[in-house]
Length: 331
Ligand SMILES: Cc1ncc(C[n+]2csc(CCOP(=O)(O)OP(=O)(O)O)c2C)c(N)n1
Ligand SMILES: [Mg+2]
Image 1 (cartoon, rainbow, N blue to C red):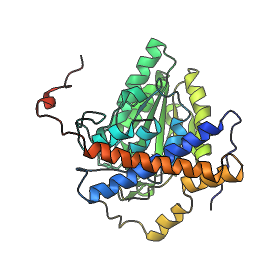
Image 2: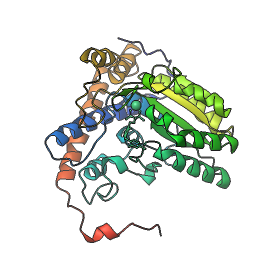
Image 3: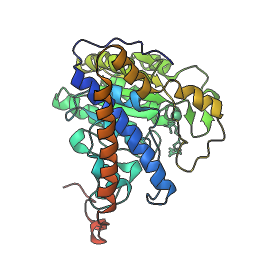
């Protein structure tokens, strides 16, 4: 099993560590449940999962000010939504297209937005969050809010034109935005090594005169958290944008319709040995940061919350026909 290299920062309380662990469990349990529900035909449409990428999401979100800082997301946005503390009942209802959903059942899995948590929204256009992120960052700068924006995207999105346009604009205007590429090494079935002529995308930061950071082990929760803590401070102090990339892996297919024939079982199994949740549990136990009993209690609470969300969503009403004409224009 790979080691957790990062040291716990003294200011990280036991409660915070258990909360981060809970977030990772919620992501895994929630997405595994949705995957089963899609296969049973209970959840309609296309769904992308964050299973395996929990630490890369939770470590980043845990370092920002939830409720005042902002994020933009992509098609694989369940991990970020949950890490920001979205109501699981409402999120499950949204994915099932119910009126009680986060977006009243009009968005579904790929369009979850949660303004209370600072989530400006997921979207199905690869690179689509980048323009929104720098617009939001410009607002923060002009209004001097002191808030920052984290723009989440994949490795594949780094070859979209908007990546270059937004990094360039953010750099010349010194906007408070962190461009964060979660590199799971594939864009659908295409390995990243087939589509870039450098080893890692974070090196592209040099083209815009901004810092590029690399988190080699994005399955190490504390390595992600510690790196983000440092970057968040730099960006909040008004030094301009940063590009950061973490390496992780998705256990499930690109989406529910992906049989995954482009990668071997051995490759997937190798990554499962570096599982972010198992490693963090071991780390907490080895360092006497939590007891087995406390960890089991968190596991049980997470499983119960996901089951509860399914009950809530299934018993919720469908949106009415009239509601299709509501929420079209901003007030
Ligand atoms: C502009 C655009 N081009 C292509 C697609 C189809 N598409 C959806 S996800 C995806 C791959 C994205 O890969 P990456 O950015 O690495 O994210 P990951 O799915 O690996 O998390 C593609 C090509 C799209 N949705 N939007
Ligand atoms: Mg990818």
